[in-house]
Image (cartoon, rainbow, N blue to C red):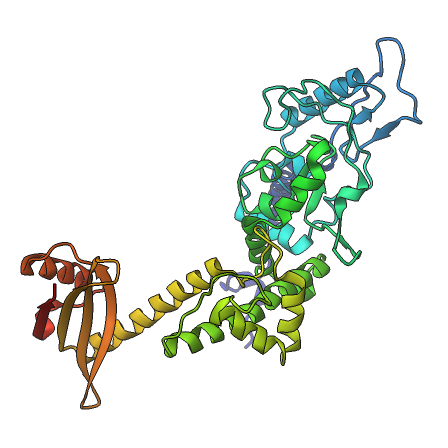
Length: 427
């Protein structure tokens, strides 16, 4: 006999009407809470403030320009600019930007990681405002750019600042330069995101009289180039809006890497044979410029890349980067020497046991130098390696021992593994 389904003790698998109404009410209340938490559409659009040109007249539309921040700025006189700036500053105070709007002048002082990722992927095209409207920035006598020019507003930013003219006449856009419609200053996109120092990365730059000179100095600076390279490495160039800027930065980096490879090869050749590097001058093409520049000239005869580099960058004087100077050569020698020392120290630690020879002798200038040579075993074969030259701290055995112990401790070599030592001193 079948069981009556109405009299069954089984739990019902469907909700009652009251339960359904209760759940619907809870869902509706939850949606209201989420809506209240969300930002209103008006939050993403700044307020519009109209600025009068004078106490009795509204500014004419032919001379005025309304920025994308919603602030009507007049450019007729210094008084009008001052009134406009006051309204802009008031808007900034009332509605602080979190760094995600298209006005770089309203970004926070420090860029967060979320903000950096956002603008790295988006690029600087929406921030440049290279078509203006350009308003003269008021300079104060105590400001970093306006000493002796208090309150002058006779100069403006121009569209020509957003391009750079190369020596061959080619025009290259400055994709990193952005104009703020709220502060009437320009900023460096890369340095601003990298939290660097300087006006272009903090308060903005508005000294239009010297802008051409200062912008060229900034884009050649080491910090600017480093910031551009670091931002380029944060995302793939194929997914970037500013792909041209990224490609240009990569090309510049690759170019100087090729130059450095040739410099390192020449330095290694001369160092392995114990030959002198420098001559009586550093002029490319001179017969007295030494072995280093002489070998670079020889390679340039068969290497079109190096020949073009020497032709464009050699003999340009101080301040022009070419990586052919004695200063760069000495820096590369120091870096290579550090790597060689690290390699020798690593082999000594691998062999564990070693002996040391310390010899002191005066050089041609009558200055005592202490020579340190380490001897260790490699594949059952004794190997001796010179590791360091350091000034002799004294003429006694204790002084030489202290110098040796300081050197071994600085390089992480345990003196307890030393199995022999020879100390000589010549007068």
